[in-house]
Length: 90
Image (cartoon, rainbow, N blue to C red; front, side, top):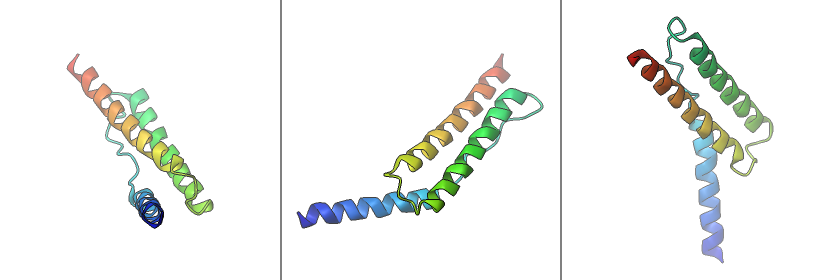
């Protein structure tokens, strides 16, 4: 039982550390070439920052859902970059 509790504590601390150290999504799509994709990427960055604000206001206790949302926003930003690169090839 103590081992399970210790593991849960360590996992929780690791998750909280990841949430603190996670960087906002990179905005690297040219707004001149792809204004809509760049705008979408900018919105992922704004959402990431609002989630960070919510985490701080709630003292990080969101059962990992905020961190997961931030990971998904980062993934969305990378997908938007790939979409812009694909459009550049055509």
